[in-house]
Length: 267
Image (tube, rainbow, N blue to C red; front, side):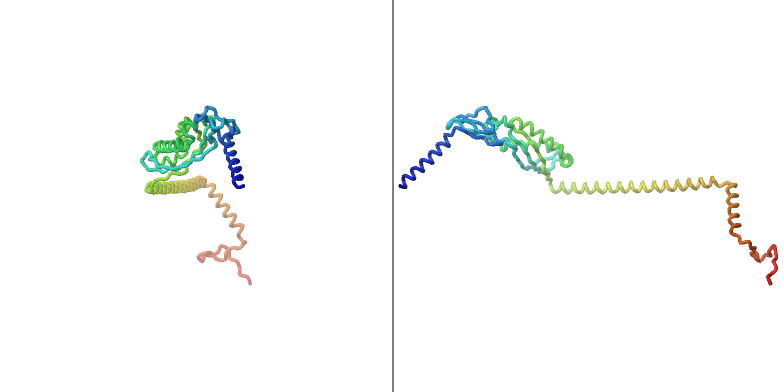
């Protein structure tokens, strides 16, 4: 009884295997393109997403990813002034759908290892050598664009497209970092000294302007003092004195002088 059951199970499994091997259909999922080979020879046609007919045993559908892939890495290079620079980069790329057959046939369906990695290392080293260590920092965007330009042409020949490229970091030797820090500090002190000098110059100019204004004011006042003005001021002072007089003459004059009028003393 057991042998019959085992025999049936074996037949069922064998049938499933045969159906799987001999199935005349192949499915290409989303984010891929299909390359159909006949006895190992790839066809020139690129198969899109969906289900496709194939000859069992003779033909096989190989999948080539066309979705965006991410690659990252870091390596050492020498700058124009012979500073050792360790650069970390990140690249996003994808296989051009119409180039799926080329990628499968020429790159063994491994574009990252065969093209991307060596191309990025070469481009980073070549571009880094054009700039000094300080320029790599101050002209970071330009350096990035130069690397992308160097990569784009080489990758295009193999059906690859750059979507994004980023320079994550530049790392220099400890000695260079200390030199940069010292230079930055010196520049900050210089800027502070220049600002202080400008402030002192402005304050000095303000003092000169105030002194000039005061001098001009005094000069104008001296020019306006005339004999007529002096007589007018004297008359005004006398008038003010009369207004304040209470009508009484002093009984004595300063220094013991005799008054002009002697008034009888009241009884």
